[in-house]
Image (cartoon, rainbow, N blue to C red; front, side):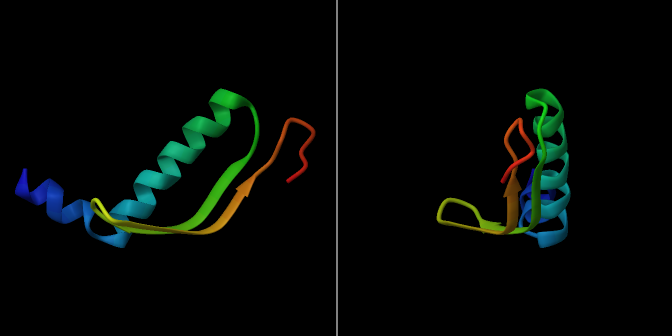
Length: 60
């Protein structure tokens, strides 16, 4: 449990998780979603960089 908590604190793990979630969400809703970089600390802060969400007409 402690190892999981420590791993989630690293930006590498955070970005891998976000990549997986955005890929699944993109497939599920049928449009493009991208987040280039994410960093967060539990309970109080989240930074998202390079966020792209397209609609069904491929417009951002």
